Figure 1: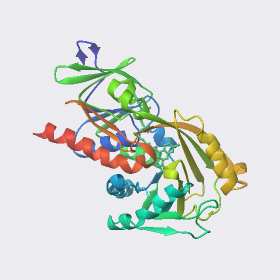
Figure 2: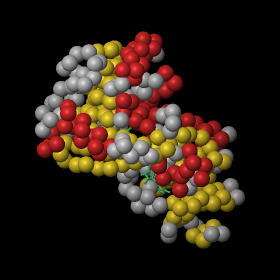
Figure 3: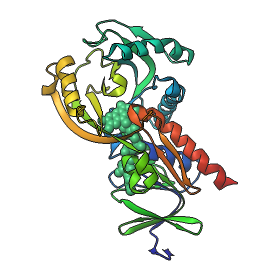
Length: 341
Ligand SMILES: Cc1cc2nc3c(=O)[nH]c(=O)nc-3n(C[C@H](O)[C@H](O)[C@H](O)COP(=O)(O)OP(=O)(O)OC[C@H]3O[C@@H](n4cnc5c(N)ncnc54)[C@H](O)[C@@H]3O)c2cc1C
């Protein structure tokens, strides 16, 4: 195959740049509808934020986001089951240190109920970590292994995956887009930028819109069940720290800080939570990993089109897994009708 630029290594109806949870869900949607999809990742599949996530899919309790993220958790659960993955059903306890923030959480109970999300305010000391007066206990949540889900989603006859290849430029050619990588070129009818924090490398608009969050993930060796983390994930201050125990007994703790806020160092936050609330557990450390992920000022994902053939879908914040199926569906819907009419 050749193009005016030289040889084309792969032709696809749609090219997805980024094999994280968002790219994999979009690829799977399109492949199930019969399109030939190419997926390229600069690393191994799921190698960036998705692999480092603690895997908690839960509704964002804030009014503007709760209905969509609750629907996202339901969809992710259904999709995981369809791919032979049984998510661990969890409750999530939101706690906040400042009295105003705690009060704001307490006031959300009635609204969450009205939107069909199980919620109550609890003060039970066996569930609420010391230092917090109470917490918003929310149902409708699951813990999944996002990397396993990405792997299964991409196992499809219609999906061709290329790993360890970074696309450095997109060029328009008549009715196609060429995606150029060193020694590898893909020609596609449409392209989706699902590159997480790196999407800005291909689009100045996205570079200006992405707010980068720095994260740290700590994992323990398998442990016996540790209440409440075996049934209830703890989310501190909207996800600045989140902790849960997986079915195989590993504790996963993720901590976040905003890139410009040096006083909020995620590794120090993570360590301080462990020392205060899980004493002795640092000796059970299996790994510490650093990460970056997209965040936005209001926690909403970035999704839309740069041109009729180039789309973008970037999940954001501590509720990124719950947003992922919602934005994947939006992108698939915007690509499919045009192609089939
Ligand atoms: C510490 C931490 C803990 C988290 N915990 C949770 C949690 O418990 N629950 C939750 O909902 N969310 C959590 N998140 C957020 C969640 O991980 C992300 O929202 C989600 O994984 C984003 O997925 P994605 O597919 O958009 O991006 P990514 O997983 O980052 O995937 C993007 C991929 O694109 C590739 N790429 C980028 N540019 C190019 C290019 N030019 N060419 C080729 N490939 C490219 C990258 O290599 C990468 O693999 C956490 C994040 C962090 C950092």
